[in-house]
Image 1 (tube, rainbow, N blue to C red):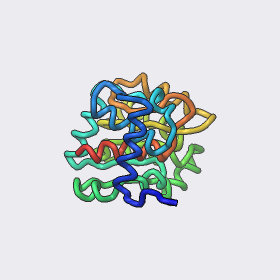
Image 2 (image 1 turned 90 degrees about the vertical axis):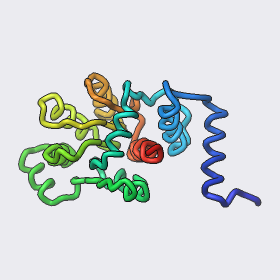
Image 3 (image 1 turned 180 degrees about the vertical axis):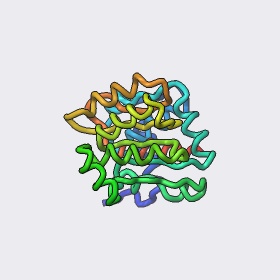
Image 4 (image 1 turned 30 degrees about the vertical axis):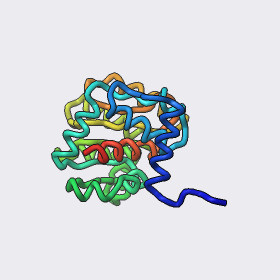
Length: 205
């Protein structure tokens, strides 16, 4: 059986198929690229209707990345999914605190999730300007609380937690914030979705 063995060719053809299926999406060519990157990562055309990009969010993300800020992820799976080449090129550090022993110890003492404690730790470093949350709704709820209380000031929140408990609700709360965000409505989402959004922004830098 003959099949395409060229990585760039496979990706290019995939994007062509996505465009054939859904046309142009978003309010700008940049937003279009973000949404199509999500569809490419998931092979799920429904994301064309689920991805929500706040006004100026893409521009805010690009500006932050070009300034060489830090990215925070809620889980290591998401961190691993962010393209390393562009990270190195832009001198961007990706932080994930979920596996730190002190995070686990403090979370247990306070009776909260490690994901929540990770957000508290991340908020202490003012260089952490893009927060990407793809797994834990509790992380997104906590980040929203920190923003409201003036304890965190991200330049962009990518919030795509997945699941049946709290995921939909946490993303609804994110949409109420007066801060740039990219999210996915409903129960769908996940680390691959969040990583694809970060990568879409990196590829545009």
